[in-house]
Length: 338
Picture: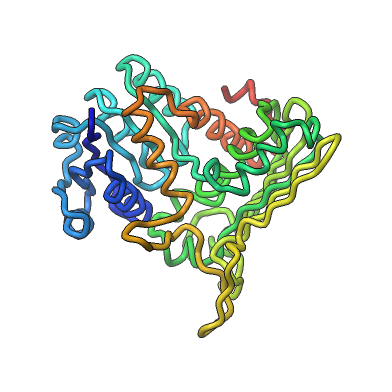
């Protein structure tokens, strides 16, 4: 194939990032946008000069090679199964699902149909994360001992950016990024999780989601604390507050992921939001587009994506274990979840 015919399910904020990536990548042919909201589907389709529909069966039955799923966190399973059963390759936004059984069903369906399944873990394409992995791979850090990963959002995200905050939370919206990144860097599997969470600020605003969660995850050789919050004040200079430290028995890496290298003083002091790319030289730039383009490459080159359905399953299981730990106030073994 010279061109991969693609459709996008979900015409929201991240669906548009998929549309940008496909539209400016020559091996990709964006054919259709699907969203339950016809006005939103048409608006994005008009912008990127393709067809639109509100019926996912038109995508499943259409002349399309692959589909990216960019629906809200809790709404990945049904569209993924529909298009996989129709023989389409699938890129699913993180998390793969918010349910372990559903994640296993997606993986089994993709295997049965012989299609490629990738989870869009964009941090694997972040140069800083790739650099940390390189130091781990070349042995300069030694074996990992202890780590800390924080990825939080300002309260703007659950109260204004998302209309479905009560169906997600910092655990499903943010933990998949950091949990996958640490697992990818260390190449270690989690064995148990102990977590604590607080619901107060967002609940008072009518959003049934955690304000903040701490999850301590034990891996094979190290212990990593994952922190995530959805109530960072909007006065913070970035929409995200992201830090990561990993200490090995030979060395240490430290990452500040909310500072893109550019700070701006206009009506306020801020860092440009790193999840919005910059368009220059006639195309968009940003590491979060690279993972989407990589999915197209995997189909063209007939290779298995590195960010697999299994990776998505493990992250979903880690988060599920954290939620169970909070509810039952105990350490949860990963074997109980998987």
